[in-house]
Image (cartoon, rainbow, N blue to C red; front, side):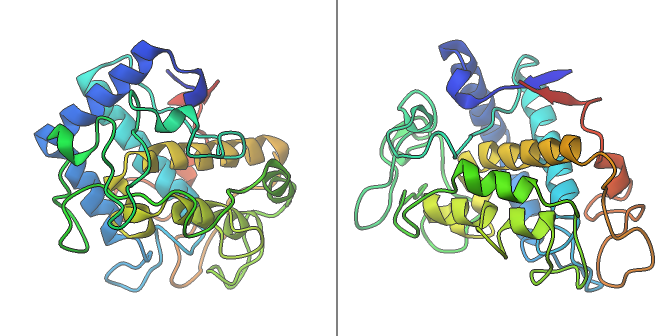
Length: 272
């Protein structure tokens, strides 16, 4: 079972192993397959009009499955690698260890946002944007430009205190834990972090920036924290709801995974 750690607690060897495994997936072409999948579901709409990946109750189980698959792909390269999480309530500045040259690299330069340091910089020759929404083939960031402040611990705790998972109309107008964590209501948690990072993180091809995985790992941890705090409150809706994924319905693009299958993460990993 994987033990997912705070990125701030990773050893130098653990950082190197993670980066090396990500780069290996990129070389093999498997990394870009994940980008294509996410981009296909960024608006949460399938060909039958059903909302899946975003702006719907399945936002959290869909991404739990998605990042678990990515972690398992990393482990085909190096079985010791697990996904770390970025606690953006604590590591809140471009000077955090997350952005060091030996890990994810730093901010983008002024003007074009091009990342010029670290293993994912264009100059490294290892990280070209093959799946993109514009003509730029290099990783871009603009830390703290689109929005100045990352969410605080107090804002997170207020969302974790919400006792109901989700509510009608089951979209970006809903009240409840899921939509407040996703960021369409209230303190704007998940969405605000994407905007704070900037660059590709503000687009459907956000996994082009490897920080995507650390961000969503923390979102998944917050869901796990909420589940422990509210053991009698679970995923809704359960049945008969148009245009969203009910508890026991399959989530696209997978044909064998339901939200119910993803409620318990402990068979797969724990959080340090």
